[in-house]
Amino acid sequence: MANTETCLKEALASIEGATGVALVDYTSGMALGTLGGGKSLDLTVAAAGNTDVVRAKMRTMEHLGLKGQIEDILITLTDQYHLIRLLSGRGGSGLFLYLVLDSKRANLAMARHQLKKIEESLEV
Amino acid sequence: MTVVDAPPPRLPVRPRPSAEPARGGVSPMLTRLAAERATGALIREHGTLYLAEGRVVHAESPLTPGLDVLLTAHGTLKAEVWHNAVARADERHGAARLLLSGGHLAEGALELCHLGALYDAAYFALAPSSTPGRFRCGIAHRLGPVLPVAVADLEREVLRRRELLRRIWPDARPDSAPLVRTHATAAPGLTLRQRTLLERIDGTRTATDLARELGRQAFHTLVDIRRLAAAGLVAPRDAPGPAGDGETPAFAEQSAYTTDPHITLLKRLRDALEAL
Image (cartoon, rainbow over the protein chains, first blue to last red):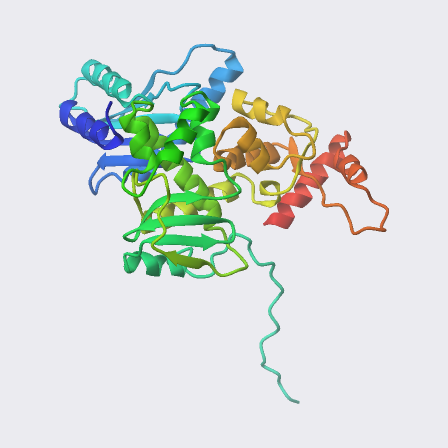
């Protein structure tokens, strides 16, 4: 049983190459918690903007009649990876974890695996 | 010949409903209480904010479902467990501590649900009001502290939420009026959440009623309703005219409901232009 803050700290500390993490409510676009990011990346702005990404994908899946759930969404930049992991709470919690990785240092498969573990420890 | 160089009178401009009276805060009183690190309850027209040492620890509004509804509606917590914890809560052990120590709820789940409820109620509590707020010093909420929020963060989020709603659909009437379904010419595909909401719109329920029934945050419901309004699927029911003009609510509802696509389009266009 972990609280929000320890989960975010664990994400930054244990995932190789992680530079910022946010927990976001995708209906309102609000970041419920952020850590890292620094001056170069305003995580609250990134949180609000990425809700549109999640919403667009979900709407497309509804239109296509796909029954599966989104586990995560990966966006690759020239020097960064952005990983969005939807939290599967009871009846869909409406939250996602947003992780920013330095692509030179990160191991994508490991990052995905660790983010899943952190999601489970949050027990939403 | 005299030359009149007085400037022409300004054209009348409709005041923007979302315009802020002044930059730098939604409530000067709240900003002052935060600076003074006050503890107590700030009671405003549409809700109450609880402060501890200048930070917001809880918020409640009659327009939003409370934390109890959000936690019990989807089976996260049993209603009797909640009532039991609230009844046993005292000044040293808030209800939140009791729920966690009893193992009824994970800490992360409580924190996130509480933060959601806090920001939800604060959005309505900090809405522009016609009466001044009152502050009652030293009052604490039975829930006890969970995750306190800085006043500046809360105010920034309230302003961001107002702007988000305005961008989706600029007319604020569907937020508070009873809602009716209208027929759109080319309705977009809806999400499951939106369909569930749309099915319950019957000409009497308001956004607040729907949020409480579905156990969803009221602001989330407003976001969905404004999207449905923008799609032309939902409209606020016209307020019944004063008694004696012969227009009953049923008639008003009928006139809001028309199947002629051209009239529907023109009405939406008019509403959008009026709201600008």
